[in-house]
Image (cartoon, rainbow, N blue to C red; front, side):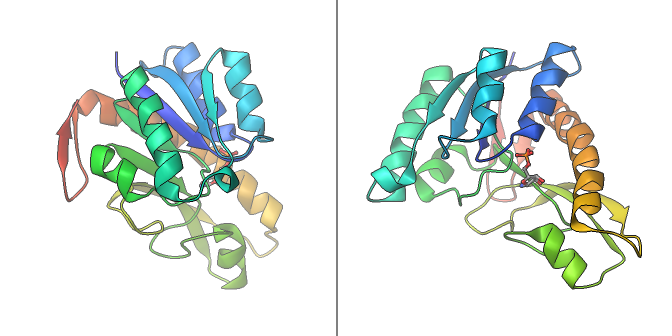
Length: 200
Ligand code: GRF
C-alpha cells in the first residue's frame, strides 16, 4: 500500500475527505502524516481524531524555508512517503522538498488555472465577473499554482452568486475529485510532472 503525507494550513476539509475515502474503502492508501504550519489549524484536530501523526511547525521559528523543509524531509523519509498531497497548504514548496519529490507532489486549487492563481481565487473570480470557475488538481513545481495540470472541473457562476455559495459549490467538487484523482495516480504506479518521472 502506498503512503501519503498531506500538507494543510487550515480547516482541512479536503484532508477529511481523504480520511473518509480511506475509511470507507474508496481510496486504498495509508494516510500516514499531516504536515501543518499553523498550530491552531482545524486540520490538526482531524488528524488526531483519525489517529494520524502530525508534524506541526511555526515558520517564524526558523530562519530559512530550507531549515523547516529539512525537518519535513526527515518526517517524510521516516514514513516512506510515496506521494505528497497539498490541501490548503498556504506556502510554496521549496527546492529542498522539490529535489526529492518533484513529480510526486500534487495540489488542489479553487479556480480553472491558469486563471486566478494565488490567494483568494474565489474572490478573484467573482471580482472578474466570469461566468465559470472551477477546480484544478495539478503537479507542483517551483511556481505558485503553475505545475502541469492533471484534471479540471468547472462550475457555473450564477448571477446571484456570493463568495460563500461559490466556495460551497467548489468544495463539493473538491471533496469528490481529490480522493478520486489520488486513487487514479496511485493505480497508475507512475506519475510524470513534465520534468521528472517517478515510479512508485
Ligand atoms: C481548498 O479550497 C483548496 O482548493 C485550496 O484551499 C482550500 C482548502 O480548504 N487550496 P480545506 O482546508 O481543505 O477545507
